[in-house]
Length: 297
Image (cartoon, rainbow, N blue to C red; front, side):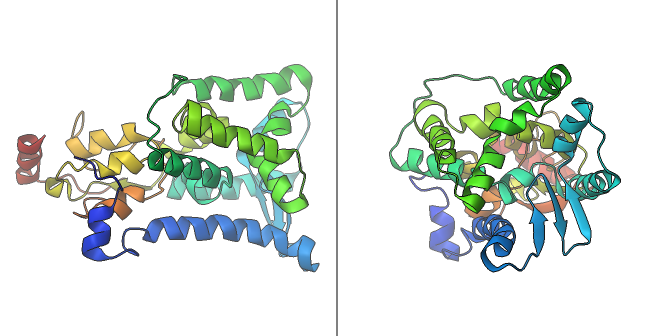
């Protein structure tokens, strides 16, 4: 049976920090990214110029969101060479560490949707008034490339909550917070993790990179699983856990789905330390492990 508070057993047996370590690191990463961009406007010392879509670090290192670059090319505009170089750097990075790591370690909207999910559990809101298909985000992704072809404008970037929230935090644009509040209330009251899990095309784009990335999370000690379901409770993409944990359709304990956000909450809350970071080349379990898995599943 799932505890009222996922990770309660881990907290009790291994301490509060052990049950929140990766969550704290993620929040530190997200706030640090925002802080780096805030330094310039607040102090006049520009560590980074630009925004999450395109930036220049210390006047030397270009970083470009490849998703935004592809939309720009779809409008018919020719990008500068530095934009391609910056996109190549970002692509290599996410191909190594996992595409949707962007969602859980960089994206500021993730803090909003995580808060909505936390409050949903606290208030015991279980109903999903709006049922959405996970494929919806991929159709929206396609649309974000079709519209620039038809209009010659970066249509998605005009309404992208990530860009809007970033500008709101940096420049204090008041109307942005209406969009943020709408996403929060949508996730809280209408559809559990509806934005990130079903609608966001940014996550859909980076999930495509995640299918071939090197770094993975794996249920490397899955024979120790006691079916407490805490990992399923906290996972933003619950469908990615079962194949690795229960061995369905594969014998590897590695989570190969590109939709895994590498948030590591499953690592945080598991009292049996079933999950850990690994690589896509992690060894397959031995015969004894497979037998134990079959007996307990």
